[in-house]
Image (tube, rainbow, N blue to C red; front, side, top):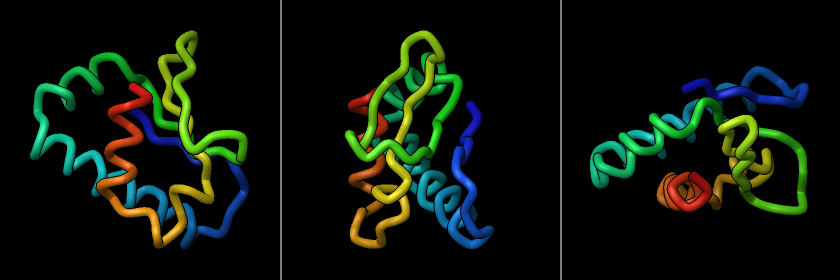
Length: 90
């Protein structure tokens, strides 16, 4: 599975997005390994983008979960919330 940031942003923001998603994926793997295995089987990409009409959505034709960049980067968004969003959208 690839994690892509589809927006020009400073390197530190990009690194923060990768770190936060990595933490969220680790939580899913640790606490719900069955869901994690399904997620990595069904999802090819996680895309962090700029569409503010949703926090997250699934794009079936691309097997991609798209997450709103401000939601991913917001320090008030917990890794648990991101994990929940990933599982829900996948």
